[in-house]
Amino acid sequence: MSETRFEICLNAVLQHEGGYADHPRDPGGATNLGITRKTLARWRNVSPWWALPKADVQGLGRAEAARIYRAGYWSRVNADQMPPGLDLALFDFAVNSGPDRAIRTLQGDLGVLVDGAIGPLTLGALKTRIALEGAATLINALCDRRMSFLTRLASFATFGKGWSARVTAIQQAALAAAGAAPSITKRRQTMDILNGYKTYITAALMLLAGLAQVLGIDLPTLDGGSAGHLIMEALAVIFLRKGLKGDIAQA
Image (cartoon, rainbow, N blue to C red):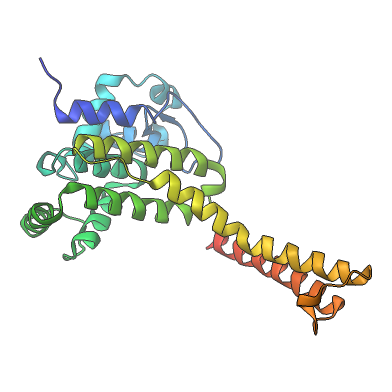
């Protein structure tokens, strides 16, 4: 008997959701198979949620986890109504960042009312968009906007590498399921890294040019720019960029 799309997508999600963990910097706290203590307590009608022992989270089995995923995430984002590929991208987004955010992001891409509920209007716009462009465009847009959100989180410094790898893997799997060519996300990320260092490279060249003049080395192309001026500008560029990066990380 062939697997359902839910089972296929759940297997893909669980490849990125490990066993039991209780990382001090993870706001979800005690987690097993991607199910947090709070989510499990809500599922089992335990209130307040902290009354649920962490041992219960640790003992969570795959079968119960699958029921939670189907009811709280798969059905919540109406994944059964999504074409292959987009169902996985939206489902994993919902698991990682919440169904409401995943739905609102998709609605933003579709240009419909952003209300966090997938109804006839959203499904109609989805059908029209896919008929015109196919599912791949939406998959790439959804994954790109998901990464944009993740990079703005304060915890990205701790979990960013894993999140980035996860989104890339899900994007590739989703595109394959949609019958589309692999994306160039990895190459774009490499280019972004290089672009990020252009400022430092420019500042370093300015600094070297200033030091060269201090040492008496003639650089004809820099006539009119004093050594001290070049060095001060280089240092200003470096510290300005560091300050901007700090502000962005705290945003």
